[in-house]
Length: 411
Image (cartoon, rainbow, N blue to C red; front, side):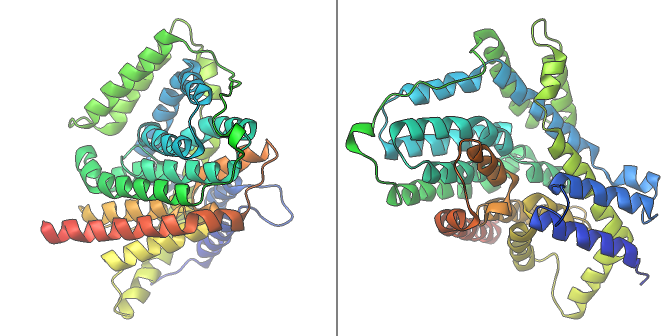
């Protein structure tokens, strides 16, 4: 087996940088590291331009881009403003507020992607909790955890699910049947856990109505348009039409607007996330072309360990998600995915998504919440996140694995 050590070195160095989130002495983040790695794979000749183009899963990028445009429609229509104002003006007790927030973020994440929802709701949670005299940290932890869990219910809930769905050719409806039940059970447990670890608040501040500062006013017409197109999108996902074609069609309708300027749409697209994906595609292809993936498979086979077996996929999905976050983990594990293998894809989706809650760097959604909170002077540390989320995350993973084996035993 021929090994290209240059490609393996670049891949190892970049994945280590992604795990750390930075390169010591340099002002480069995870997106930059992935992009730099992909560029180096081309510059050093590990992969050529043709292979680089073929390695990029454009349907996944199209789905991700189209859903970002749909979310932008919701934002520009003031949907998030309307929802958050309703929450802020309510007089819910801390416990009830947490339950409402958990299921709201989970439901929205299942349809509009968890990263987008965390970006929209974090400032609102911070404003409400601070103005009511509550400790914001448990609510922010619950927001990130519930958005990750909720995103695991559908093929469009998070970036790794979109990739898994395209790579393994998964059906939208079957994915829902496989993944929604453990997600719902995990959300219920998260509510119970959150109520048990509810922060102390002063009685007079427990149910104060809060006026939320919002940057976009509610527009009934634009919000209705977004809701209708979302319903159409989900309905078409149950049809045989390729998912990326459906998303492209919806995105095309969104751009044909008499009021919302295209450039405004583009500013709301998460370009760094798209670039991160493109860089990871090149990195993983370079690792595969260098013989790294083949060498790994050979080592596991020599040790009589099945790489594409339930136990290994579940375990490696969890461990790699802890080390490098779930998106890079999934892309690496699916580098040589067996054609036609779908059941393991559901298991990988569930374990990698739920494992994102174990540690702060486990998912991009966690990092978004931490970054947004920091702007309000609230610091989310690795240890504080671990203390609050580790147990419910571990329980959700156990639920997911148990449910998967139960379904496999029944069918």
